[in-house]
Length: 373
Image (tube, rainbow, N blue to C red):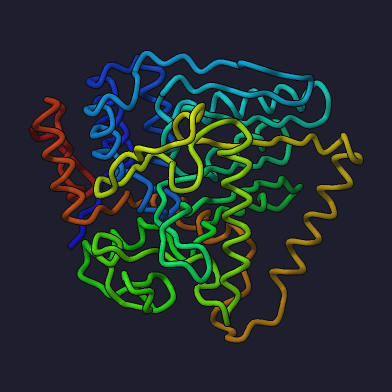
């Protein structure tokens, strides 16, 4: 079962929870914006459902509310940022804006981050570059839940790749994808709804394909993009490895099986290599006019978008989309109608409400909502 809530009511609740944790108002608003953007774009696995997880990390002392992300090394086009064990929802926008500032000066900016935490949806951070008419790139490693191709052992995260590319009259192209066949959050949604995982998403503890959405808690593993060797799992493995190396090895963050997990059922690694710290990210910003006049590029992007949208579909009722179209349509709908939350997420948020002393809004009824404790 689901209930629908107004965006503003959920935003107010989320900001209040972060402020109760000790974040200043501006930081609480930014963190809430990152989470709400996930729900608005239909990426429910990374939105308000994640809020109790951040509180759990704060309880465990793994997130500092007074963190001050800072540059520890830089060149005109690159920087290494230490997240100071801060909330990834705040560390990532800081680092992305460093990349954008460098791109403004020299054409491209690249920033690697160590000592951070889970940063929400990668697309949010990549899209920050669109504000400056730039191409944005965001990568992160994550909880080791994915088995490399042909492996039983969980060694990699879902390790997303996001790229945002501006256009002219058309909307931007926004690619935001996991390098696993599915994100863990998709399994959590199936767990809440009592559904079955499609074959190819996950394997059991013996490496056999399974429909079990609880397979990870039972010793199984997520599969890389491509799922099985015969369908190209080595490609997903390679993409995930690339993200892990740029996000983890390059900045000196945790990498591979030593990434500090966000999920509650994995313990902290005890044998991490010396000198590694936290979750890692990698960001890039590229000024279009560092390559060619921006206006002509965007004209050609419009042509690219229109031609791909006009590709002959398999089913006339389902036209071809460009990356970002489904999320854009979902955001427009949810801004108007509100955000649906599954009953189990609502209960978790109500428990958080009671603990933090923050009123949780009632669901929308005839276009209205009211606050309840």
